[in-house]
Amino acid sequence: MFKKPVIVFEGVEGSGKSYHILNVSRYLKKRKIKYIKLREPGGSLNAEKIRKLVLNNKSKFNQNTDLLLYLAARSENMDLLKKNFRKKIILIDRFIDSTVAYQHYGLGANLNLINLINKYLLKNLKIDFTFLNIVNKKNMSKRLKDRKSLNRYDKFDYSFYQKVQKGFLKISKKNKKKYQIINSNLDINENKSLIIKQINKLI
Image (cartoon, rainbow, N blue to C red; front, side):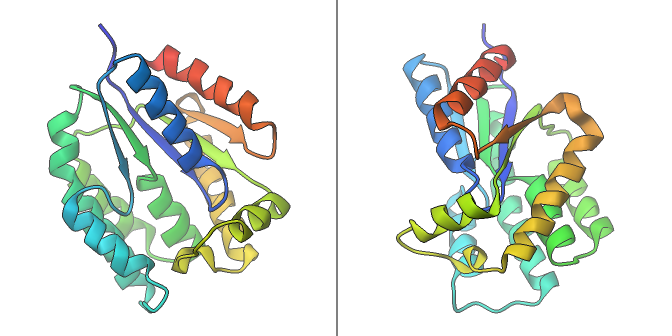
């Protein structure tokens, strides 16, 4: 019997988190292990509608509207998450740490408000493990240039992403046992093996 943890992949743009969550989902599928995979913002039908709005290059919101839209998208995912909690492995591409790192450390939104709404939305749902992907300026810039299209959050100055990444690292230090730092500046195949090895421990 496999354990059914909630596993989150975090990191700034170009850090490789989406690549690695896709690789893990393929691995689980190959082993015929039940899982669901979500992204934030996005996931459910309504959350994907909010994603289009919040990431649209023409959108201009103040920091509180931005924050509340992300939390609204999360709210739309909660029924799906609670329905599958401890029944299937849950993989999430960005979750509550992203809200704190981007909205608080990056844009200055109120941390108490973020924590209050997250606590209300999540209730008993707990994150078991987080892979935090970090990247340097050179590799981040190269990977963003290689993208076919860029959304609103792909176009900030590097100083913004630096603040966000430092925020992620600060969050991870509060509970080191539940985090694994993945240095995406290193060989991608080494990181794939490292992540799959940890996944096997978790399940």
